Length: 390
Figure 1 (tube, rainbow, N blue to C red):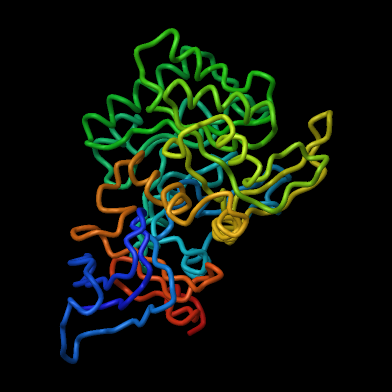
Figure 2 (figure 1 turned 45 degrees about the vertical axis):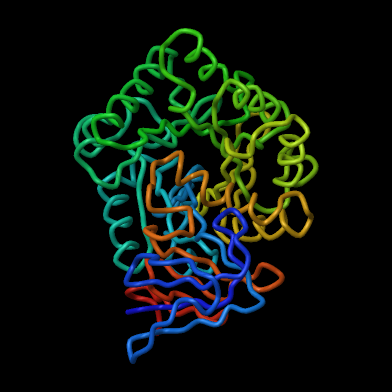
């Protein structure tokens, strides 16, 4: 199948102006001046994008594709994600992970779910492990998972500074970071150690010790949920200054008493602190739970994260002029492609995968293509899961 997207305002992520995009199969063949690409025939699909914006498909690096939660017992296990949820959120690539529950959810099931979603049309990867150390793996070690299992790109989400963590020692944490680094090198992957940050007072202490006491570079570890509270967010500024990367978590607008920092406010702090946007990603934590605990550690509330908040915040950041379109595209797509070594993702250029999001003037999706396959057209979902109603 040949596809031509005509006269869209392309952010690749850098602004290219009006362009035609020529796609053959799953790959972008050319990004040309309007009218230059001329292909005709019965197998040519044309998408008119005049007056619309085109960005790389979003990359969500933290998704509980099997569902998360369970902190309140079996009835509080969150549901699995569906391909419809993913495409409606503008996401074309994701990384699946386990969370608190590494008992009733397993690495084998995580891998199977990731492969299933890929059959349904998107690109998927996974982390080895859950909250705990020692890490649950597929082959016996994180290092061998990275070398032998194509979809494994690191270990995560490993919980630190959280009452639900396994309370790892520094030596355990450093050893795991070393496993990720060497496994990544041997497997030709990023080998990222992806760390869940809780409300604990130690914040990023283990990460800073890693810099002081080992040879492991800061690029090997990415902490997530760093906008959980203001002190943690401020400490993450220093982590970036030392060469690290941080991941912000979207979600519903934070309640004033929660202490959480909204995405716009988080970016305002980074910009004020002159933190390079190239060291920031944003993920949804989709289908994970947002448990609320009282001062005695008792569960008193529970909600579920949704991937739709990722797209909502992408739009809000642009609408509020906190970020330009090209900056938002970089943070939500190009940066994660770089950090996780997804070499064919995160850019609109010849030779890259045809993962594209076409949006109207209000940054609402009209078309979504994943690996060249049209998954949404004129705002209507085309992609359907195997067991979804047709």
